Image 1 (cartoon, rainbow, N blue to C red):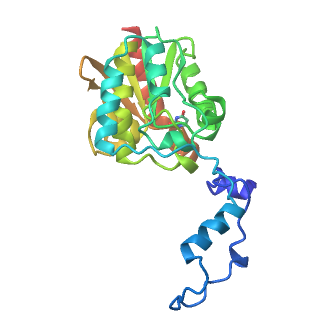
Image 2: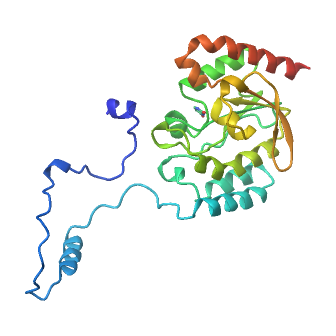
Image 3: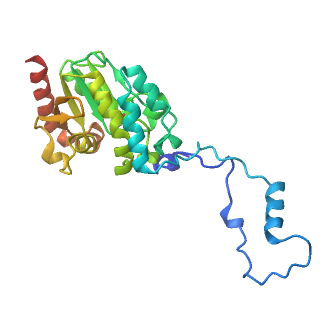
Amino acid sequence: MEWYVESGVDILLEDSPIDRFSEVPPPPRQKVIQVSGHSPAERLAKKAENNPRPAPLIKPQAIMPDGAAVKMAEEIAAKTNTLKELKQAMSSFNGCNLKRTAKSLVFADGNPDAKVMLIGEAPGRDEDIQGLPFVGRAGQLLDRQLAAIGLDRDSAYITNVIPWRPPGNRTPTLQETEICRPFIERHIELVNPDMILMLGGSSAKTLMKTSDGIMKLRGKWVEVQTARTQIKALPTLHPAYLLRQPSHKKLVWQDLLSLKQSLNS
Ligand code: URA
């Protein structure tokens, strides 16, 4: 099981396992001469009736085409006037397929009145289980980074661009990101922080609408623009990346000092 989880295989699609080795290949197709009163289709229907397959555990598929899903997300996000309404709107939205495999809607954590809003990419396994952003190993590193500049979850507000965990922690697709964009943009407008810290390339690229890499973007203050507001924002490296590349912590330290200076000025 651990090996499967490590490999990213951590959701069940069926109630019971299927032994693919015991499946006998079908015989070569022959012309069917109908001798009894039952056609092959009728026999198949009968067989299915006698051996019903268990219903899959996953929720029904989002059937909206992507363009329609983006439009619907825009419409319902624009109608919300409080964080509670936004959370409610997101949990009733069925236009993003990531919702089918995720356990939770990971909305946010921390203080919505804080001066700084931190925005990551998408929940991972621990976040999906607990329903809170940045609670796994990367989140613990993030808490230590915040503590180093005198912040914690009472003085910062934390969320992600994507609120549902992508299966196996894969990178969200461009379509998934665009479907979720209206929600994160409305989230920013409703929190209306003094400044944003964008955690990692995915967050920075989405919010800055650029394809530049995070190594080029990090450390330079920019303005994040939504339909109704503009907030100063700093891109930095993602804490999960720092777990793999600890030598880059010094770059993030520079960014954190710059954030601290802005918060105190
Ligand atoms: N990585 C993210 O980008 N967000 C989380 O909430 C956890 C890990």
